[in-house]
View (tube, rainbow, N blue to C red):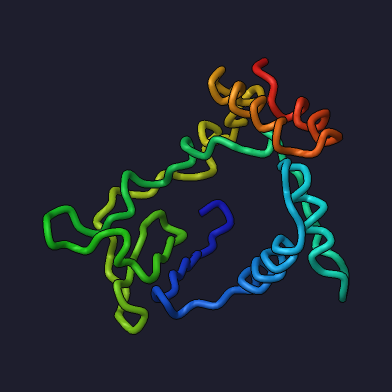
Length: 172
């Protein structure tokens, strides 16, 4: 709304999709069959080595600081176009149009005309109250039982890797 743009978000029909990431996942899965993986950190190297040409995949190892809290950016109460039993649900939507005047339209079929969304007026996303903040202030802690189970796994992984395991399994 701030930039006076109309945004159309389309959803593909179930079963009629093919995405670039499908081949990426396939290449990584084939590489995984060739070696054992004992630690999460090993997945990073495995994914980088999964493809050589034209260049290795770029892999980013993320931590708790990557995740953001988008709950305050909610523009409407619900995306569901109907409210009664038998009405369309969110899963039926094939396209949503966010209009620059603060309204929303939807389509149940790609060939349909646009229908006005019954939701209340969209909130203005330019408001200062809609800032994104970090979702977590610190690393997530694990339960003591999970920590114990992870320690038990040291018996089945190669000895050199148990040192690396310590940095991923702390109770702090």
